[in-house]
Length: 154
Image 1 (cartoon, rainbow, N blue to C red):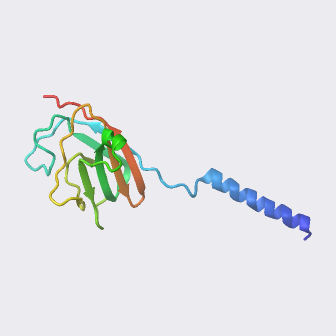
Image 2 (cartoon, rainbow, N blue to C red):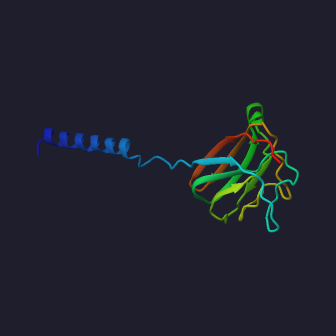
Image 3 (cartoon, one colour):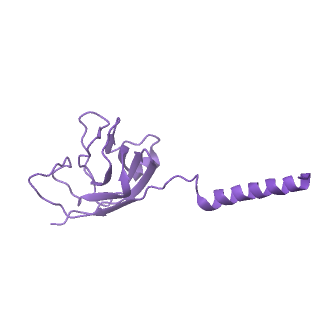
């Protein structure tokens, strides 16, 4: 083969590689989608709940687009994030090694395989109308979701 042919073959391979990279997203990481909603409180005798009993807000349920093995979970007021370099989370759970895959959870509830980052810590009560940010980490990536709790209705 001549030099001209080798150049054309190399150019075709480079263009083919660029096309695959741009069109197939082989190297893009998966985006974790989080959804949240407020739901009325559910009473029950067998509820495993560490949420404060007298809450001014309706319970908030978080759901993911797939099952995740969480390694870290934080809820932080957005005002703290905007004003502090190191904001204080009002709920912070970590997993050392063996968290159970979950597709959703309610704020303040026990999540199997996770423990409070500070031993004995419990989640603070949410305030209605205050904007919070949920930050999660898992083996497949990180994600965040802003939410505003609504007042509890009787």
